[in-house]
Image (cartoon, rainbow, N blue to C red; front, side):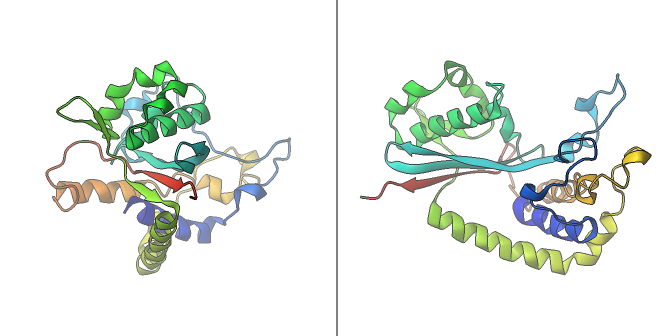
Length: 246
């Protein structure tokens, strides 16, 4: 639901602000490229208490690693949001996000397959954070003390089918609620006057699309329509395993 709703709003935003693939991000006049937007707050601003923090979305993020026992590729893909679960806190054990993701993929795959030999290549800092992964509902501890993976696992073929289906519903949502989305997308981020003609539109609307999907999830949970009776995190995370060919 998060993916489809989020992407449907982005589709309409792109109509207003323009779309640009990552490989074609424009150059800045004084060097470099426009890759991201930041937000400047007052020195005493307490971001943790911001009313907007509960609605932000980071992602979809993800990546593959190759040649694990029994698999030619294993990938992990996720969104980070208060509405479902702060999945990216799973990677805070390492300052390098890419290294942290690789370690998490190996660890979760080791739990999934029950192959303890994979654990020898996993940083000790990661293993010390098992309680975090239990709280995030990445894992669950069974009565006998063993860990079981709670993250959905798909084959590469099933992932393609799943993402094709999500794209189909993304398109339906963007058409069905096109006019309503347009009304939401009208306040771009403020930038200094000397940059207003230079900063790409899609960056000035970068955070516009987060609020509606998160608000929708909160509302559905409050009504008992979504995750009824479940008050733990339910992070939007997915593992993809491509098995080795026989």
